[in-house]
Structure formats: C-alpha cells, structure tokens
Image (cartoon, rainbow, N blue to C red; front, side, top):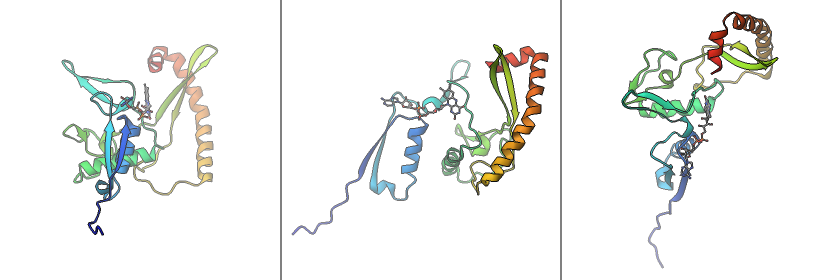
Length: 195
Ligand SMILES: Cc1cc2nc3c(=O)[nH]c(=O)nc-3n(C[C@H](O)[C@H](O)[C@H](O)COP(=O)(O)OP(=O)(O)OC[C@H]3O[C@@H](n4cnc5c(N)ncnc54)[C@H](O)[C@@H]3O)c2cc1C
C-alpha cells in the first residue's frame, strides 16, 4: 500500500487579455488567502502592455500622453474604486489617507499612492442633444457629499434616491435654460466642449 502523501495538483487558470476585466479577475483570484497553493495563474496579453483600452503611456521626444480617450470613473463605480484602493494600498501600505484630489498628487515609482492621489472629483457634467439640428447642451451640477467612493458604507434607501432624483430634476430645469442662454452667448466656448 502506498502511504506517501500526494501533493494536490494546482488548478491551472489562464486569463486572456490584459484589460481591466482580466486584471480584475487576476486581482480577485490572487486576493484569496493561500491562492499560491491552489492555483497557477497565467495572464496572456497580446503585445507588451497591460491595461487594454484603459492603458496610457508617454512617448519621446515630447513625452505627450498617448491614450485612446478620456478616463472617467463615475461615482457609482463602487467595486472598481474599492479594488483600485486595495491594489494601491498593497503597493503602498504606509501611505496616509489625504483629501481626495489634492495637489500635487503623490507618486512613487510612477504609481499613484492611493485613490486620493489618482482621482480628482468633478461634478459639472455636460451632454449634448441635437435640438432642431443644433447641438444643445444639458449641463448638470451633480450633488456631492463628503464620502469617498472606495470606502463603502450603507446605501441610501429607495426613498432617499427618489427624493434626490426629484431635487436634481427640479434644480436641473433652471440650470438647463441657463445653459442654453449661456451657449447662445458663448458659441465658440461651447463648440469646443463638443469635441
Ligand atoms: C474612446 C473610449 C473612451 C472610454 N472612456 C471610458 C471612460 O471614461 N470611463 C469608463 O468607465 N469607460 C470608458 N471606456 C470603456 C472602457 O475603456 C472599457 O469598457 C474597458 O477598458 C474594457 O476593458 P476590458 O478588459 O473588457 O477590455 P479591453 O480593455 O479591450 O482589454 C482587452 C485586452 O485583451 C487583449 N487581447 C485581445 N485579444 C487578445 C488575444 N487573442 N490574446 C491575448 N490578449 C488579447 C487586448 O490587447 C487588451 O489588452 C472607454 C472606451 C473607449 C473606446
């Protein structure tokens, strides 16, 4: 009878691509305690750079940023913010929390220290609608609070969501008229926002 103990085989996991979806999977799997004993994880990325559509970089000689577009995270990306803060905290465990969007942001070895450094809050949002063939702005000042999107906490009740929504729409009615008048008075400024 063979009494030698067999080492359990590790489960092989292949993660395809290096975009945020793939990196989230890798982060989640490797956050499990003792994952090294159970899994063998390989990330397959076409080309040399991770990040997918979220990647950015700079190119010599002018070191301009080369990326495919804006990178905006909306306040309700709770899980994404939380994961980003967990990852940055693992990289920079000594970093003290500071005010969100403070300047200059703290950077060590090319990486932001915490979400407080990597993100800047922005509440003035604009969208355009073709109105009689004319691009017309809907400018919105979104309500803010003093919470941080990566900290979590109790979600508001359905009623407080509805009450906030009604207040937002009522406030919006005045704002939008103002935006239309503003646009007529400042056509060039607003044209540049469309691009
Ligand atoms: C112009 C633009 C602006 C955007 N702005 C925002 C924004 O402001 N806010 C926001 O939340 N979202 C934004 N998005 C959406 C967001 O960027 C994407 O939803 C997100 O990056 C998609 O991530 P992903 O991991 O699913 O895919 P991707 O980022 O596309 O990653 C896929 C990865 O797989 C790799 N790959 C593909 N084929 C193979 C293969 N055969 N073998 C190995 N690797 C492979 C690719 O190289 C890539 O790295 C924007 C998108 C665009 C196009």
